[in-house]
Image (cartoon, rainbow, N blue to C red; front, top):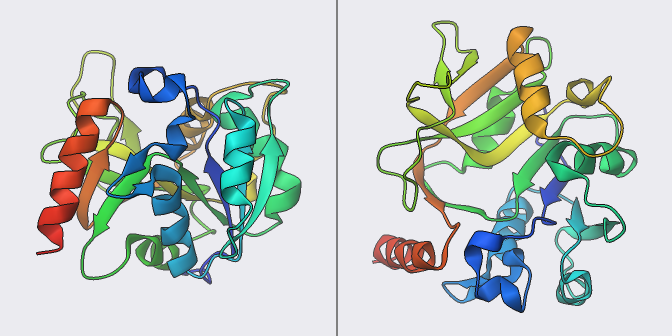
Amino acid sequence: MAIPTPKTAMVLAAGLGKRMSPYTDRMPKPLVPVAGRALLDHVLDRLAEAGVERAVVNVHAFAELMIDHLESRREPRIVISDERGLLLDTGGAVVKALPELGAAPFFHLNADTIWIDGVKPNLARLAEAFDAASMDALLLLAPTAGSVGYSGRGDFSFAADGRLRRRGEREVAPFVYAGAAIFAPAFLASSPPGAFSLTLLFDRAAAAGRLHGLRMEGLWMHVGTPEAIHQAEAAIEASAR
């Protein structure tokens, strides 16, 4: 059964973004401009359009710049999760933010994931497809072929029943995690203390048959390097014609 569209979200924005140098020599990666807006604002705009009311954003590198940038944001309302003292990696960051995220399923987005929607917004599609009875996490997946700025070997393949299977070490997978998901709080249950990667929880949910995916409609853009900025801007400009 579909859930109501989540009203809360976690945005991972504390990464160091070393591959985005020289931009990240003077600013955090989420504030790097793409098509006239910071990467982070592209993400927050999507959440606002989806009806999200509160977004927890974690900060570490150039934290003061991030906090200053977010002060004027009204939709969604921003809650800062401060990781200046200890960077908690992707999993530990979400565990730290759980008190602000509440007891219902919530959106989870990377601060550097941007896409061009298809006919229906992908966040709305995630909410419609999420079934708490059978899923702990529902990941938005983009095809490895045709995504802008991506040249990796993929992350997942779909099983016949729609569950996800992680790519083996020597395999090539047809889909890559697009950095957007819905997590149930149960997804974070029994998490280890301190810093750890979400990969651990993805693998645990997959082993339990509770990790599902939804194929993105539209075009995903992996903006991980300065060169990828130009590719993403060209795609955004082409979509507006």
